[in-house]
Image (cartoon, rainbow, N blue to C red; front, side):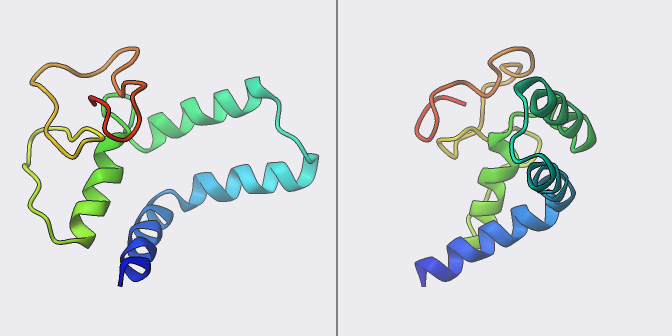
Length: 106
């Protein structure tokens, strides 16, 4: 059951970010290694393409998890890694996602 739900989450995220994944995988296969400046530029471009410049990366990931488990998530607010709404206005700029990882604050 848990593996099935984990697969659902991965498929949801994979469907959304497939183009970025394929682009990086193709470059890695061609070159065998990707220089930091190239991958950094790719990530910046992906952030713009997927609307993640003004949105913490925790939000789409945690919403995919919540949707799989049919948990209610509030609309109009961004979700942090702890699956709780981020404070109003506590977004954007450097460190918006926080470095705390799972269980961290935002």
